Length: 163
Image (cartoon, rainbow, N blue to C red; front, side, top):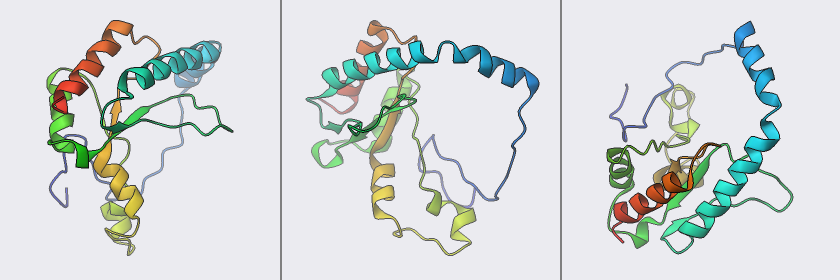
């Protein structure tokens, strides 16, 4: 690491790497999952809709989907409205992890990575990406997420932001 970590999610890209190889086994697994794609995306939409309903009154910004698009909801990213809560982004993240909720942060702005800073990019070049990074937390989203698990995630978010 060239700097201190911002939190448990932190990583650094110090060199540019390429790896375009896929094994035959990975390809076979991918092909076998294609038959479930429509079902998985439909289920993710159901989970996203329920998250939207359960989280709407909290001081967080929910993901939006443009009317001309159709998200697969690979991730469900909430953004903390930090000016409306008394705890930090890191505190909320760590509180959720302490409850065994596998939240993460997707993604660290690429221009803040050491590799790109060596090319002349610097903090402040993309303020909206940096603001997103300060606020974003990816909460659990997968086709097998149950309503009980979803309820637990939401209750823990409420506790973490001190409501």
